[in-house]
Image 1 (cartoon, rainbow, N blue to C red):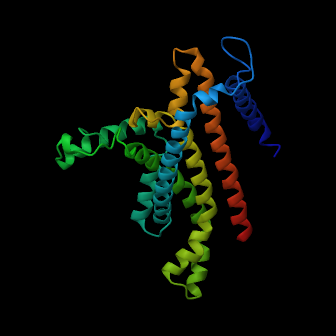
Image 2 (tube, one colour):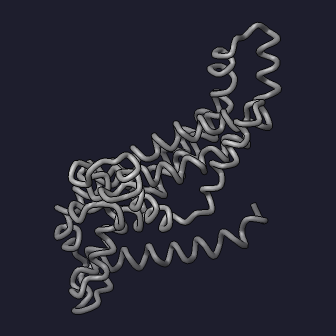
Length: 272
């Protein structure tokens, strides 16, 4: 624990100061104009967009995390298989990790837009191409997050399986377990803690990420990070408390997800 403190203390100080500042601003205790006065007006004024943003952000984060978890698990299983092609597939998947999300969003837009590379490759007229970018289902946003986060999931899960699954799998095979029985009773239980942890990290990151939704999403409705940024950069200084309220709501949702994930992981560890 002491070895972590030099890195932990500055992070806690910076994040704590930012949260306290946002809380004071959203409650009217540190206004940019006027006298300090305890008030929930910022939350009331942002209530309409805030409710829509919460549902939209949770939907995008949940869908992208689910797809990333399934794809990442499949990549991890392929990377740890005793096949040279599978290992090559895992190595190629890991190459996506250093790519920034901003670059990934731009590439996904060029790929999935109505006049993008994929529509030209398939020979589909732009007018007949489904609205993947800026469409009502936020498909391009989900695809970008799932693509990037699946590599992260695969890297962590493959690291766990490569060090533990082989010996347990061989033991189960000697006891007469088939391939699917080993997958169900050996591989998946070993991968579950890493899979749950990476899914929680991916969900929280997607929930608070701004750039992908801003580039590939619709103008309205807005996810929470996009809404907070728009309000904060507005020329109307009275919108700053609303931006702080949206940001605090996002942080609160992320904290709830982290606490629930930690509880579930502890229960899973106790069962194992």
